[in-house]
Image (tube, rainbow, N blue to C red; front, side):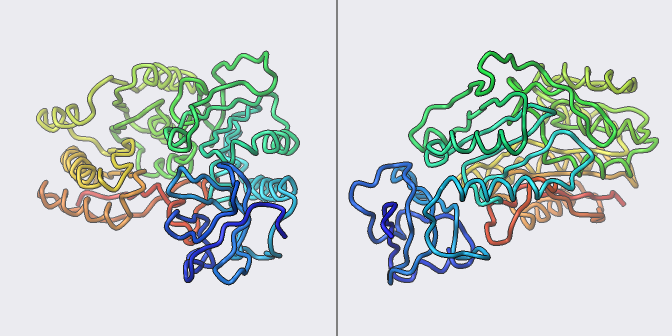
Length: 400
């Protein structure tokens, strides 16, 4: 069974893999077959030669092997010989997993490790498929992946937007290209979600164009907004503002630093025939502080900042930043008002967020009540076996 190179783990290093994780770090490896190239498919064995799975390797990365098939999976039958067959099975399962989502024509069909396809993101916006590849091993399988997704999803256009900084760590340049048809021109696309319409700029927009992971939370926001003034901080293209107005908000104020996103946000409001909205380009930290100084009050405040902490070293500074915006956000709430807050920083846990909120409330001398917890949309599944798949943490708080 030497169809692919062999990676053998050090003695005792198989436990995390048998518990369901897909990453193998460089300090867990005993031997690698001579001549193994970065990006190659490899078979992984424990120290005694027992098969653990099939994945791909990159010796440039601390995460040296990422598994596509694991002994922790149901139905594991040993080491895979046909990678196309494995990829088709994984992609077919991922697509079927999202078949229950009927309230939108924009959803994530592949979510990397959560679908046992590390290094691959695939989002559909109408009939346009946007793929993002972040690892060398997945890059080498791109032709197979594109062919399978084309067969499963039948998109009219396939667009690659592989701009993640992680590609550089993998020894690759960022890449952006139209895969099918090569003559296509990617224009902003109109999508629908829970009864509203949105314009998405796939080329210039953040991530693959839209924050699909907040879909369920935008819907949940509605129960707090009727007759309220709503502050939408870090509003991007106005998704939360739109659902606040749909729910009968008195008016909305959206804040962001991205001028182009704010123009799209205003277009989205007009597309849905909303009128009582304002968007303002501003440093959100400074603007929140100014609104507090002006003694402004809102019935609902939404805090959806970008990731403040992308590495462990940034965590301490991120906590201070989160604490500051929460203190301002709480001071802006009228009594009985609701704060909907999020962290998408991988290194900030749900417990960290709760601690931050409690400390901010103490500093603001405000009493709060926890109403509900929030997380990423169902097309961004997460598994307890791989904690890294659980990245979006959210809370709804009420000022007492």
